[in-house]
Length: 313
Image (tube, rainbow, N blue to C red; front, side, top):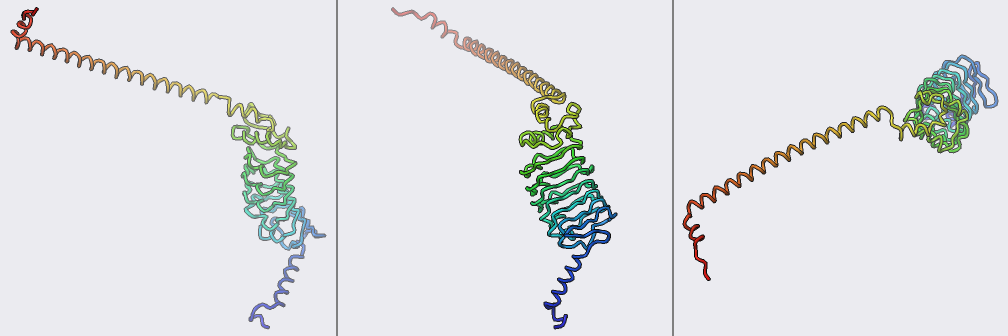
């Protein structure tokens, strides 16, 4: 059978064999042994190719890698351990880990992460340990970032740029045991209240709770974030600050001014009404007097005859 007539079984087997061969190589300068590939500190600037497809543990730490290509990483369907700490990775996109759904350990610490997509970890339902510490440019996390990582037991968020965290971000982690939150510039203002109350209600005490402290506002600087729930509740719900007092004063003055103007207008209307009514009454009285006088002049005899009519006995 010629190749022109279509790929036969021999050609398919050949292609499959080539795929296995290409997937069984070892990247240059890396060490490959027993389903483990170690490329630690090899000055790599990009994700290495030729990683064996049956790799279960991959060490890419201490390099200069700037991104993780989903297409190549997704070929490692048996991967359970991935160490990418101390690289230059700036962001992890949607479905970066789409093909490595067996992943249990993931270390992205000490990189240049600025953003993590809400769907980045969406397929990692088996993930047990996640480390994204020491990413000072990571300023926020979406509330659904950990929505599908329900097996997560260890989460390290130390030394990032996080200033606040949505209380819903940790709702989907029922088995979380270890949580690190220290070294972040937590702003314990009213927008932080929900998360602070969540830490109290859920009894989720960070492993470094005494070191996870507020940097703002001034009155709460140095307070552990696990203990600011009640002070924040007082400040944000029951306590009035200077702006609130000014607002209430302004509202009170407005109500007083409006009431005064309304009373003045009511008085003016009442006075005008009384004057109008008095004038109307005086005009009616004058008109009635005029009619009586006219009647007396027209019928003088009738009046006298009525007065002098003899009284019958």
